[in-house]
Length: 241
Image (cartoon, rainbow, N blue to C red; front, side, top):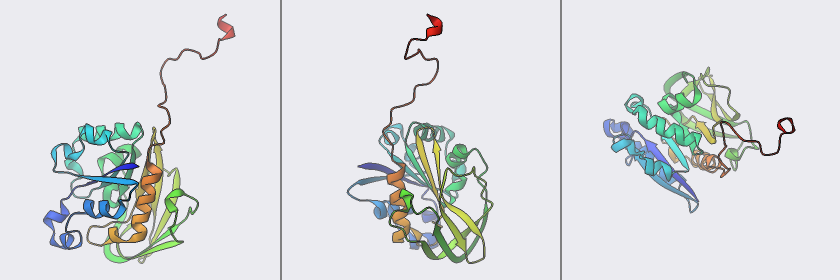
């Protein structure tokens, strides 16, 4: 069983009727309902809850955190960012979706500005599977087509991904590294591009399967925590005899 927390600002849905029409119960609930299985147990958290819904207790009972943010990045308290960062370093998985590329936690983990080109024109996106052997690509066809999405284009200011799983092409001609994995401490991070709030992307079965695959990939490995600092020898050192 994998314990997942889906975090969403839950601001667009309250303020914009266009978004509320697409996600009447919030992006977080659409994602939770879309990825929940007998093996994936899902809870949600939102920006305006106390501690942004990310209390120490909740995070300690989270194997994988899914993050969607856009208009409220700066409203996330630095202390909560530090709390999430430490959990990732200790082994919690993190999946960052769409405009979460500008979240404080993603920029802290990447160590770069995470900027990119963008255009909101409702154009076609074709997501190509460029690493079909990767677990996140399990059951995914050669490409997935989204008829209407926001464009993100290169250059994406991130470190070179440890693994590149998906690359997107857009109707206007741009390309984008849309499925990237990173290893940080004992934790695994998956950035997945699609998910603009005015389009029903998070009802798409292939998109949900990719996120579900990402959850299983990012779940903690269970490996022993590394021991660091000054360390006594495991075997006798002849030079000290």
